[in-house]
Length: 300
Ligand SMILES: Nc1nc(=O)c2c([nH]1)NC[C@@H]1CN(c3ccc(C(=O)N[C@@H](CCC(=O)O)C(=O)O)cc3)C=[N+]21
Image (cartoon, rainbow, N blue to C red):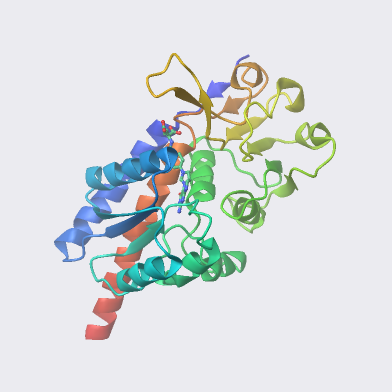
């Protein structure tokens, strides 16, 4: 039997309905959630992601402020802008689109964002809180993957999950979430990476296989256990002359072959991507809620 194709767009739009309701309710109470998106340079992929994030804000009643800076912006200039946003009452979330130009250190920028506005969940404070199971902003892509698992009613508890990729934004935080105690954790987790020999020996054991490495068709049919759930986080742009844009988006999984073997699989596009943006909206609304809560506390 062929795998069911998980529709990320549908799952995302269901979640966005309640996010938009919360945003409206906060707005009525005088605190419209606001997101600042900073883009340095003109990388076409980054430009299109940033545009998608702003559109999603508009559609769900979240104020968005786009800050586009030239590619030769200095680290100091960028840090000054972040410091202003940290104390800006209209802004509850700050997102600096990665990757940044070579001359800017990602870590310096991420650490300058107030953890209270770190809606990407990349700040060391956010990651530390997550590691200890404290409440915090969860990184959007791993959190989105958990939402997909909830939607398809796949509980990772007691299952063997194999993650391909050890990035700070997907592989590492996701491994931690699936490992943590509770319904959407309690998994046995294996993390593989570019130095793992014999990948297939690991992937073939996976009840849940998650590919987040950025290599088209890395995951082939023979690497997948029959009946596994496969989540494809890859967003690789490959040249395609038949497209107006000149490229096509593909994941890390050989979709057409693997769908014959898996129980369920996410496509690219319209798989994980829409959930990533949704969880960014979720965190921004949560941050506005925290702000309002503090306002109420201090006026008592
Ligand atoms: N500070 C920061 N935070 C991020 O969250 C962040 C980042 N930097 N840098 C780049 C990556 C990538 N990323 C995506 C978000 C949405 C889609 C998405 O919605 N994709 C659509 C299609 C998009 C298209 O067609 O171009 C889909 O898969 O259906 C993809 C990728 C967020 N990132």
